[in-house]
Length: 146
Length: 134
Image (cartoon, rainbow over all chains, first blue to last red; front, side, top):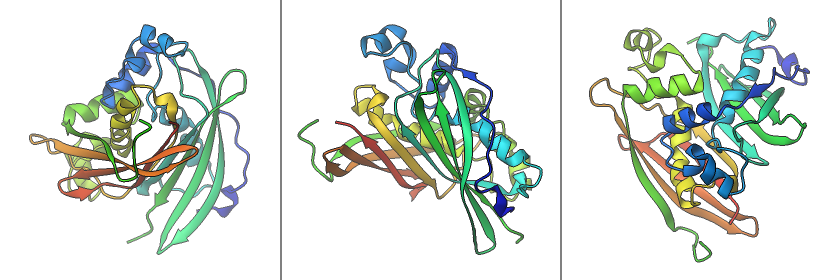
């Protein structure tokens, strides 16, 4: 893997408009029972503008940044050997339907361990006003030759 | 909620996964990696069979915490997991994933809820922790 990826500047992703039905679909897929994920009235009663996305929904927005990373021509990352090592979300607020989100990628660490490479990246997700919503951090493990 | 103590189990839930759950998550998340619905592809890349998406396991594991918070995930400040073992979802038997949520730390910022997530007797997530405001 190319160590020069660390510190490289990436363009923000194209805006992702969060749809109400997408939030509901995602909520059903992760077995959510929360009315705030499904019912706009319940969400408004709790102080949100529209239905609230489940805590792991930011992965959908982050995914575009991971695709950027894997597509870097000089990255040297073989997608077929990539395993998801760990994942973290640090929230300023939950995502709600109607949000228009962009994500900006930064590679924060590249390590080698026992023939495997580990690349940690942070995707900073902001709303249309530029305010921080959530930062998604992933470590991808690229398995070495066995 | 103010009367919780470190070590208390605040929620416990078992989820029944089947292949339909994986297809549903694939569509909802946009992760259409074949290993989550095709046995032939899973076996060809050296896996014992079709696996649940790690992000599906992460996504459902926090749901008991959201329920405990009255459905308001806005009180979750941070959520992290490490993917340590795969969840194999058999075509006919499916897979049962059990989540136990326990208070790990209580401090001025709120609580750290530690999740033990097991499938077939093994833990599948490591360092699965949600920081919540109380």
